[in-house]
Image (cartoon, rainbow, N blue to C red):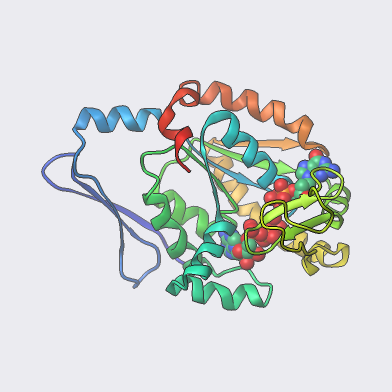
Length: 272
Ligand SMILES: Nc1ncnc2c1ncn2[C@@H]1O[C@H](COP(=O)(O)OP(=O)(O)OP(=O)(O)O)[C@@H](O)[C@H]1O
Ligand SMILES: Nc1nc2c(ncn2[C@H]2C[C@H](O)[C@@H](COP(=O)(O)OP(=O)(O)O)O2)c(=O)[nH]1
């Protein structure tokens, strides 16, 4: 299992900080961040305002749907690991090329590839509050993330199996963008067609009820240590229900107590 280690190397002042993450033993360290123009006070003030959260849950639990609502209501950036993977594949980066070989086989991308692909993107977000959706999926990923930044909240969606099966049976996807529709909950304007591009939608083999049971078993096995990890840190918030519309008010209330000032911060709302 990869070991993670966090090291901060300071220059003359706090305004010149590099964060170096060594995400596996023997691998070259990844230099994540260098600040140059901020005074100590600006840095402290900026960090005090920022809010970082992750959202976890099995396939079909509503991570994407709820993330969009959070991003919209609280002005956080919604960072989706699936989107990062797709962008890297499209840009043919080294990590993207590696990731593609696994996705083609319907497999999860290995931790070391995923970490290399995602952590540098988080560095570009140091000025923003964000919500990370789809990462971490394993304890190794959670530890790597922990080595790069401190989280405020981990949202855990706990949805009954029958509900997940029903939702995914009706899930249609636009593969190039990852846009998701549900024929009952949020149908496309024209059946089988993506609203934005006009391209066809598909149903994933993986979303069939037979495949889903195996996927969920695997999810439970790998997610349990991640959930325990955040529980031990005292930042885990679990929400259980069959309807996103009933979960959403509770998440909204929680976040209102945690991020009162961010909503009006134009920096978070204006760029994506
Ligand atoms: N944290 C991660 N670890 C490993 N692989 C990942 C991770 N995030 C994304 N991937 C890869 O990218 C693919 C697309 O991810 P995305 O989250 O969009 O869809 P998904 O797996 O169908 O998620 P869900 O079913 O939970 O909605 C995944 O199937 C997986 O191969
Ligand atoms: N019927 C119904 N469908 C829902 C609800 N919340 C989300 N959905 C739909 C939207 C998607 O087609 C599917 C899975 O949602 P998602 O947001 O893609 O979940 P996730 O895989 O990102 O965790 O379920 C909901 O509350 N009811």
